[in-house]
Amino acid sequence: MMLTGPGSHTPAQLIEVYKHAMRQVVSPVAVVTYATGAGRGGVTSTAICSASTTPPALVVCLNSATPARQAVEAAGAFAVNFLTDEQSEIARQFSQSAAREHPFSVGVWTEGSLGAPVLGGTTASFECRVESVSEQGLHTIFIGAVERVETSDGSGLLYRDGFFRRLASE
Image (cartoon, rainbow, N blue to C red; front, side, top):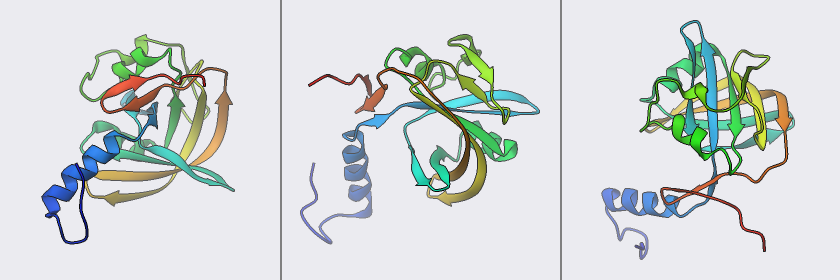
């Protein structure tokens, strides 16, 4: 599937080619968690990246239709828990398609300093305060000011073309 040049595609074709291309990009897998007065929750996400190192900040993109989107904004804080390749079941627990009743039943969770659940044994977990919120198409972009970081050894869980993947040694 390829576009041949400017003006050679309709907007609908561009969307399909874009989706196909993005499925080929390998992404780290994380669970974004939050806690509100109504309880705690989370969602599996691959749309996360560093926004800045000075000051430390992350970009987190969530589908605007998910309950997590409204909850993160209401909480004013969230945690990003980047999973190891041994934590794929946790990714499934928090996936939108699964919507498990008790997603925190898998893994060792603690309450972070900002209230959001933090998963033990991740490659990295970041506790963030919501600094800004903006809308882009069907998604909401959160900029989170990082206030606390935890790291551990482990190979990161990856996602590509609908499947979880593991890093291979060269």
